[in-house]
Figure: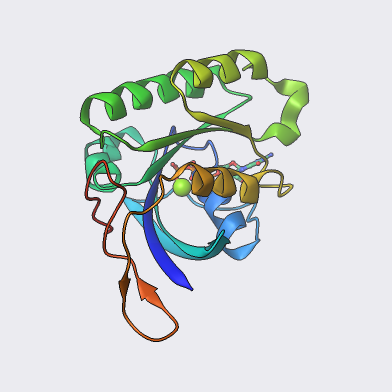
Length: 194
Ligand SMILES: Nc1nc2c(ncn2[C@@H]2O[C@H](COP(=O)(O)OP(=O)(O)OP(=O)(O)O)[C@@H](O)[C@H]2O)c(=O)[nH]1
Ligand SMILES: [Mg+2]
């Protein structure tokens, strides 16, 4: 089966749950005592998508302001960016809007943007109405989903939605009898993966 490598970065305020989402997706695990990310961490996970396998090369960035200047290294060349906010923190939604602006100005032209409202298990202390976030996502043609890394809600679905949104490939180069290394990226640009 054809394997396609897709660089994906996670962006968003510190504490919104980026690492927890990645940990849930890759290891199906939730750590209540997870530490803030320093710099960035890298994980991979391969999932089926139609006749292809999508190997996500996931860069989980640090949300603390002091690491902001590193972000371009991670969103550059990304096929998709997941921008995470915390539904219980209005400030984190404002930060998300800044990330959208930065990606528009400096990110890859055809990057798939997904907006994830995390911690939706804490609906009783919600500060960001789902309707408002959804309308914002629609206004920038982004994927929108609310997730709970803690309760394993919509984390797989988030990455499935990204998979479906990635434009189809033009060509593939046969590497061995039963596997392909896909060397051409979507028609609009040539993307480099890590
Ligand atoms: N209730 C709840 N708590 C969550 C959820 N996801 C993460 N948390 C908690 O939120 C805190 C921050 O989670 P992290 O995953 O470290 O957040 P982060 O966005 O990676 O933070 P930085 O690495 O500093 O950018 C931790 O205490 C997590 O246990 C969730 O879905 N629900
Ligand atoms: Mg983190």
